[in-house]
Amino acid sequence: MHMSNLPLFNTPYILAVDDEQMNRFVLEDIIENRYELVVVASGQACLDEVEQRVPDLILLDINMPGISGYEVCKILKSKPETNNVPVIFLTAMMKVEDEKKGCKLLQLTTLLNLLQSQYCWLESKLILN
Image (cartoon, rainbow, N blue to C red; front, side, top):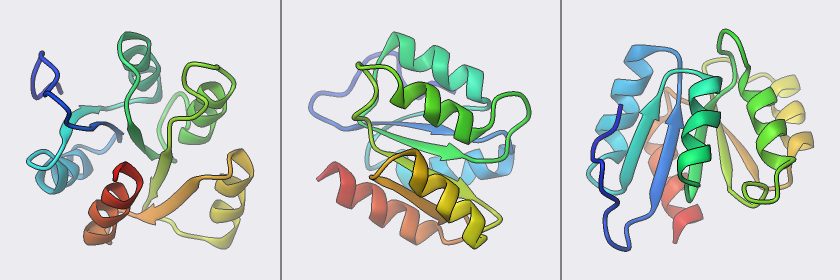
C-alpha cells in the first residue's frame, strides 16, 4: 500500500513486507507518521518495489507464502544496489534457530517479534539515524 506517490524530502524511506493484514496495519500505525512508508504483502512484491526504488530500511516478515523473508534477503544481499540496505526480520516465532539463520544471511540483520512493536520503532530509528 503506497502512502504517497511522491517521496518526502529528506525523510527515510522504509519498505515493510508482511503477508498478514493485521501486521501491516500495526506497522503502518507505528511508522507511517515518522517515516515515509510503503507496505507490501509478499516477498515478490518487495523485490518488485525495490526495483522501482531502493529503501533506506526493509522490515521483512520471515514466514510468507511464495518467497520467504530469508529468500528475499538472500536475493537482496546478492545485488550490489541493495546489499547494503539494512534488514530487520519480523516474526511471530522468535526461536533461536530463526535468529541464527537470520544472522547468517548478513551481519546487520535484526530479528524482532512483531508483538514487541515499540522495539520495532526504536530499532528502525536507531538504524536510520
